[in-house]
Length: 207
Image (tube, rainbow, N blue to C red):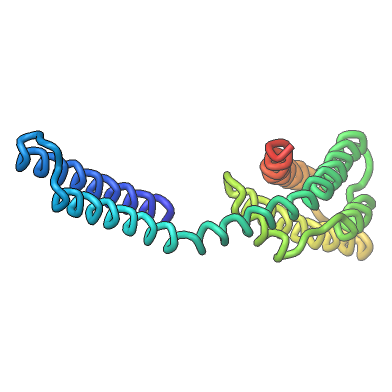
């Protein structure tokens, strides 16, 4: 939409300037490059007034959009501060989980699932309103952080289900669980880090 708007404004600007140039050539040709008469000045003033009125109309027509974009950007700037604090904490929790998995090859994962699930349930969170506020950020930061949040909830439920299986002494493939956890956590860290960097770059740009 922004591209179309800019293209239309540019097109009409070129047309207006071309018309002004054509008018000046016509006036000078008609006068043989002699000093302009009051009538010629009237034509010039009318033409310039028309061009100024055209640009003024464009300015007024786009003023609301500019104000709305400024407001959206300001809100994104304020909300990004929350993500700058919260996201690294979540990444740290996930990296700690990877460290535990790496150091617990001989431990039954059933014992760890409940702890992991509780850790994810008590993680720092962000709301739908927070995500909507950072939509103006580039590279789909809001989408990535939204997907990460949904996947974090899904992972917590997945871990809780395996914790229940362990308590009920139901069999599950521990090697498969280990692989799935490592893969899921790695993807989550990637999403979170990408979204976090967009928020951080905005803060650094403002400073």
